Length: 220
Image 1: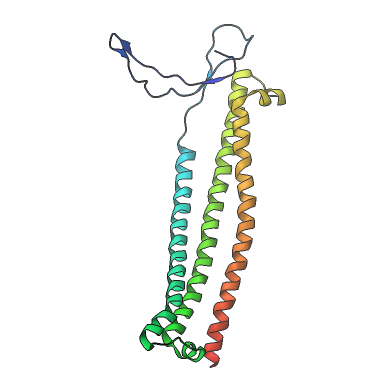
Image 2: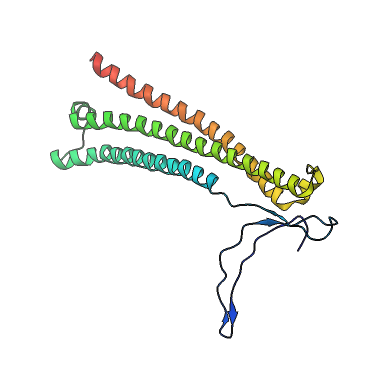
């Protein structure tokens, strides 16, 4: 075994029939550093499900928000399809193409267009809600990753009796993986906040479009 390296062990039975399937992996164990004298026990790192359970709630929130956004988008698409079908339905009923006056007099078309503006605004709100859920997940991922990095620091101190140097951090594969995991949520948050600014502008535009038509109809 290599010194100061994390290992997991699996046990399998073997007999004259052959090798059986391996059992579940052991808890990860960090071996002692080289030159530290014989004997001794490596640091054992317990698997913790606390972070996983916390992230589960955040991931479920993202999934629920994504499902609502998908429904809102589908409603917009169905409304657009109904508006696109209106000229054909009119032509089948009256045996001629509709004029602008026909469009203006059609209560069904006017109601569907009003409904579509409402649905577009609802979809814009659902996009913001989904981004907010993803922001919550990214922040929780950041907290979990930071806690795992602090645990790595504590394990190293317990094993080596000193704080890790920069060279120790670079040489340790687990530290490199944790550093990458700590950086990812920050990148995700910056990307999400850019998306959210665009989504807020889209919602404001949809609200203005909805209000302009409602105001016009009230004035008339």
